[in-house]
Amino acid sequence: MKSVVDAPLRGPWIREASPMRLRSPVLLTALRQPRLAGLDALRALAVLLVIVNHLGMDRIGPVMVFDGAVGVELFFVISGFLITWLLLDEHERHGHIALGAFYQRRIARLLPASLAYLLVGMGLLALRQQPIPWGAVVSTVFYGTNYYQAFTGAASHYLSHCWSLAVEEQFYLVWPFLLAALLHRGQSPRVALAVSIPLVWFYKAVLIFGFGVGEVYLYRALETRMDQLAAGCLLAVLLKTPRWRRYVEQCARQRWLLPALVAGLVLSTSLLRGTGAVADQQLYGFALETVLLCALLPLVLIEATGRSPAAALLNAPALVLIGQISYGMYLYHPFIVHPIHNAVTRLGGPHWLGIVAAIGGLVAVSWASFRWFEQPLRAWLRPRSFSSAPSRPPSAGTHRPPTRPARAVPVRPSPAT
Image (cartoon, rainbow, N blue to C red; front, side, top):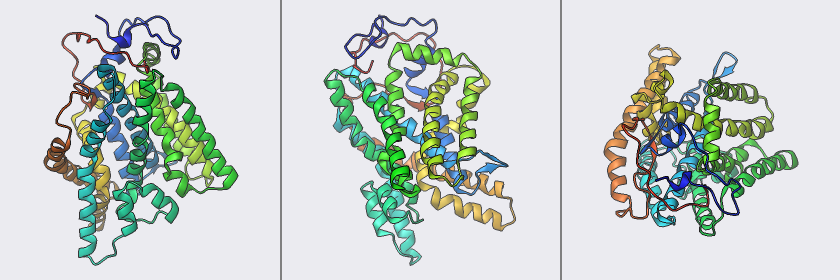
């Protein structure tokens, strides 16, 4: 019996009239796995780009290799894709989206580590008799750090990097409601998402060229960064359709495409960072990199399900581990990486050794927090009943090839497909 996502697509908002029969539906198989192979590797890449960049290493010669801004962009695209995919899956299985359970899961995922980081930082500042940035503390508690920094000049302190977490949470205060409303009315969200992305680019151009708005605001405001989250959401919606999955699989057969996308990202960052023109990074660079990352993500999912050397690398236990604890690594890194790096360099160690040691120490602390603090609290805070949640929700992780084809389960069609 075929799943609805492979059945003929019907409705006024869809143009295809017949199913696309794939000889080898690799992408659909990958997307149906309990854990999405390759996503943890991408998360690991994102957090490592941020950390190495914050430790003062960005270029190797003229080439911008470690760009923290690309790491943040990648986090936004992955987050938009994964959460939208889960919500669409829930709607297909149960006919509705349980918004209360969604937000309870978000709280369980984010609150333990962020609250611990906030309180420990305040305690350390008090012990050292240093001033506590109360404005930043309050804005972090209410996920408003991005606008607090945008309007106060983005002072450097232990909560500075929390602006990106605020952007994500502000987006998810709006998007699940909009998605649920569109699906309830039988409308596809693809048009709303496809229109919103170029509108954000146009809006940023008006801010830059019409009003001279600076980088501090453009880099942190929700309305100037939501195109990256929306692009990930749109990718999830498109990959629910057989036509787009077949198109992506056809592209994946071109072995040069994945390296070309990576080269495009490196070229964009190398040429458009540090030019002195605000539009180069905030408008042209971020728009181009968002498109490249959205093209890259499904190709990585396909590659990670194979048995090639690239698949072995994407499923390497070390990368999977870093991807699983990437939230904690991103959150805790101001406390850990700089002291370790400085200690190594003071002892005469080279800069690269200080970076390696700092990342190793951060992995150890983040894993301990994940294993013995975050996971137990998450299990306690998560909804006790999962009747409205997708069964075996897909997440990032290592790929285990199925031993036999999975039997398709009949599901309710979603307007997204």
